[in-house]
Every structure is written in structure tokens, then in C-alpha cells.
Length: 323
Image (cartoon, rainbow, N blue to C red; front, top):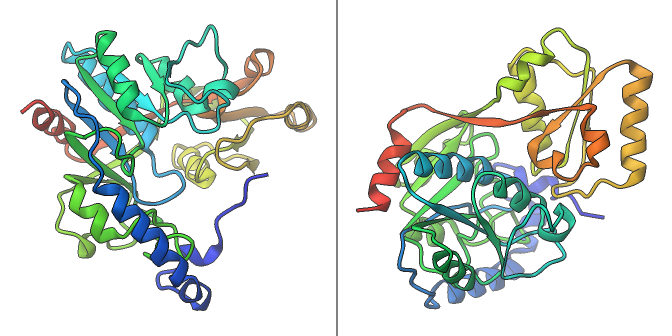
């Protein structure tokens, strides 16, 4: 069972519980700082990192896919590097959808591998070497901002506009993996997803690029249809709200922990709800890779597209990557 983050992490200011945990946070910050100074492997090709400074989902994977598709449109051969969180295989290895499942390599790598060659492994330097040897002329990291085994050419911090940096405390007092000061010093820009409800601008002088997630064209199938939506992602409410913003108001929503592996009992429950309520099941592409094919056939899978406030922003990032 995965534990959900404590509510005080999302407060605007640290409360008593957060302050009591500051000694432990100081240790985490010290370890993170020491790791950040360790030299990593310097790849012969440009490396773009889509990372974050908080735990939980901020939208790194959709951004990774967006940049990979743009690189492919430019004629490049990008490969994707991922840790393979939630999978049994440790790597380094190439994700082969015909050989592995999400239980083996993780849900995000399975999703990413449909777009471009994807590698998993904790040591990103090792996977980078393998990717380049197999023809990659650039690398895109899905997460890994705190991973020091590979030097990055350009690092982006992906930030959710609704949750921001929470109470701005380091684990376990808050959701930060390291101090904001340390993270900002290694990033080249912030990609803010959605409306800035936490006034991120006042915290940093880094360039802030604005984007939002919108549902893919599959959403048209759901207009006027009674649906039950379920998701096992970092912040399921973001998916449910995206549906509502698109005019699809679920009659019921079910949230599962991030990277949740759907059990036969889960599938049976969801199928029973679909039949009893005469509704259509809706979920994310990340969840879909963990569903049995027969069950997936009865579920509408909604992809996520990235809508940039400045349409030229992502191409400017890629121009910098190859400068």
C-alpha cells in the first residue's frame, strides 16, 4: 500500500508538524547537496531534463512526450531515459513492449516507449551510453533532476500551478526533494502548468514558461455520455478537473495512488460499476498501460496534449539545447 502525502505539506506555511520535522529535513538537504556536487557522465549528445523539485506528479511525462515529438519533427532521433519507477526490472535495459509489461518496467516507460526508444535504469549515465550507441542524437530525461550520474545540457523544473512548492519545506517536513535555492541554481527555466495559484514568480528569477494540459481528441466521444473516471496518477483531481473543463462531468470519480498496479479485484470492481450504473469508464493513458487488454477495450483512454501560452516557447528551448 502506498502512503498519501500528509496534508500539512500543501499548506502555505509550515505548521507545528513541519517545524518539528526540520532536523530530519536538514539531513535530507545535506545529503542532496552533497550528491549534487558529484560529477556525472558527459554524453556526446545534448541532454534535456524534464524534472521537478517536489514529490508527486507535476506533469513531467506529458512534457517529455511533447518535447520528444517536437525533436522528431525537427528530424532528430531522441531517446528517452527513465528510472523505471514501479517496475521489477532494475536496468539498464531498453523497454520492449512486446517483451515487458508495466509491472516489469513501470507505467511511465511503457507509455513513453510508444513514442520513442526508451531506457530504464537508476544510473542515467549507463543508459545514456547505451542510447547513444543505438543511434540517439539527443536524450530527454523524464524526471532525474536530482540524479547526478548524467550531466544535463538543459534542465527544466516542471511545477504544478495549483500546488506550487507546497509549504516549501524539504522532506519529511514538506514535499521538496531539496531546497528551492539549490534546485533553482541548477535549472535553466520553470515550466508552470496551469494557473499560478501560489505566486511562483516571487520565489525565483528563473524564466517561467506557461503551459496547460488539455485532453486529446478522444474527449469528443464523451460529449453527453455518462462516465465514471478513475486514475492512479500523482494528482488524480487534475485529470478529473480537466474532464470537467472539457464539458465532461463524471457521475463518479475514483482515485488510486500514483503508479498503482490494478489488481483483478480492482478490475472486477470497476467493471461492476460500469455495468450497474450504465456508464462509460474513462482513464488516463498512463493508467491504460496497466489494464488487461480485454478490459481496456471497454474503457475510453484520454491522452494529454500540452497547450503552450507562447507557442514559440518550446522551440526556443530546443534551440538552446543545440546551441
